[in-house]
Image (cartoon, rainbow, N blue to C red):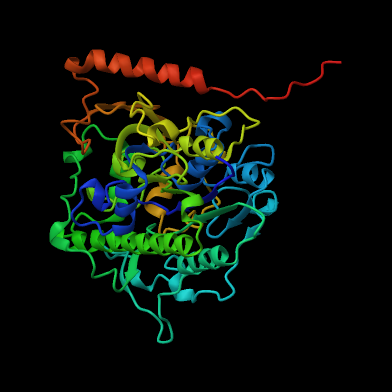
Length: 492
């Protein structure tokens, strides 16, 4: 490449991998992502995050480190000044880094100057009503079965609004304005960590009515008595109180989530159009991926957890379009990839040799169609040990407040029972093994049981498979247990 490409990091929050049309979901409305995968990008069928909640996942994909390397396992332990962050790497390499959206990456008290040139603040602030966490009149009564469902439904625009102007719209429009008025002497890095489709599940028209409810795939059911599943899921299920929901109500919740994804796809398309209009689309590398997934009714649950790894949580959309001068074979790739491969791929495209050890692997050979054999297994981890009180997340607004939206999950993180046990997933295309402290491990046949409803950890027919996955997990930890600094210290 003659010059460094512009870089777009389009990072929606809590988007499941299966809610994309080109992945074969007939209910998904994602024409812009579908177009990219068909014409000039690669979409990965088997892409996985390294933690199933926001902050640990972001710390991982921005550093190329697994959460265990430096203990980034909670929402309140973010990247420290001495730790590598891709945004800082790009800024130090001469990129104009623009950050529009949520944080969940670096300590707010440290500021953002080291990581970006602009931490965008919209000139027009959204109405308070668009923050569905703060303005939660949609929940109903505390003893009702919608109180912890996160279901808000159809959102109404203000009378003077053309769009439902919330934080996401504000940041996307700000990014489009930057593209039109970009610096002439620097490559751009636009980082858009959006909120949608993170619940509460609510979206405006036309997206609310855009989804054909009759085309929604069937939900995965909870095993009878939660047999073979981690106790956290049973505990959350009991507290969310959604057992009496009809399938019609679940369809409305799920369709609203799909509508939220359709809205993000529209915003993504607007940003791509802005690149084309500015004449820099061919000079831009685009990365679209989520930090983790969402239950959205699977197993009768909503939201997410910190230490369970069902595919609806750990498997994420991941679409990459390289600049035009980089070889690409547009398709849906069956390569197994991890989000830590994102930072390694950016570095390869930008010609940057990192000054720290990390575990990501460049995806350029996969983009070019040279191979779909990238990783033999992928990993995800979370939870805590007994005694790790710093991991209980007492800082959460739900702590001590049984009315908090996240209370059905947070309350278990405050106890020393098995519910918030430390755990790790090792997944191949055929099997998933989860090792847990304090309670039963898990083993699933992902070919015959994609819903992970039958735990076969004690099945003698899979004993050899289990031993192989345990050995692979040991190799993973040995390979990634630490990082040695690049610069040695003087001894004298």
